[in-house]
Amino acid sequence: MKLSKEQIATIEETLVLNGVVYDDIKLELIDHIASDIEEIITKQGVVFEIALIHAFDKWEVQLRPTSNPLWAPSWLNGPKLFIDKWVKESKQQIVYWLLLSVVISLLTAWIIMKNKSSMFLVQIEKGYEILVIVLLVFLFIGRYFIFKSATKTIFSYMFKVHCLASVIILTILLFSIEFDSYFIFAENQKFIMRRLFFSVWINIWYVVYSIYSFYFLINHFQFERKFAKV
Image 1 (cartoon, rainbow, N blue to C red):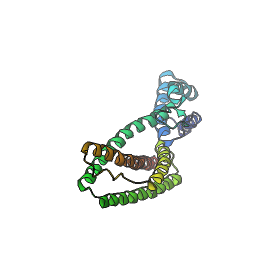
Image 2: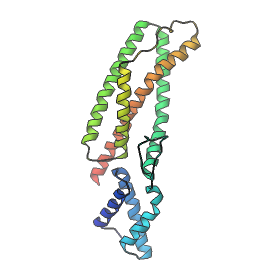
Image 3: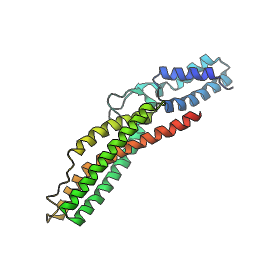
């Protein structure tokens, strides 16, 4: 049997009462729970209200409030399904984020060593400052569009958290950008590369982190387009 619109609305209301407030997770769960309810009614011949209780009992563990301070903000508490998705996205992105920052830092350090020019280093710093300013502008624009969005997703929340951290970090960097230059003419090549790499990486690391914030923004609006068609 197929559930009515009123019964689907009841499932959604029950999910909200259980702390599921993000549309992407909510839509996914509604499909699963509706299928479970239809199966229970067909096999057991019980009324919708009884089938609803049985179906939610099946999802009790996934809907239980939890937290994960290691991979999610310490203040974040919600259904296990939500926290698990947050952790999965965070772990996946941190791998790309760290790898990309290392590759870019090695390339930048190599270019600086090839030129061995204080003037060239100043140009690199100026270019980096412009990149940071551009990133800040786009982060504020992205935050504005999230604010105006009628859809609420886990990706929009993750973008807001990353955006806040990125704005704070990038603002600090903007007033403290300085790649160590006194040692690029030193004789110990291994020492030079290690010191130069760290100096570059500490800046690139946060920039790449900020750029990856837009991954969540893009995913949010992709879901919003799909959600509008439902």
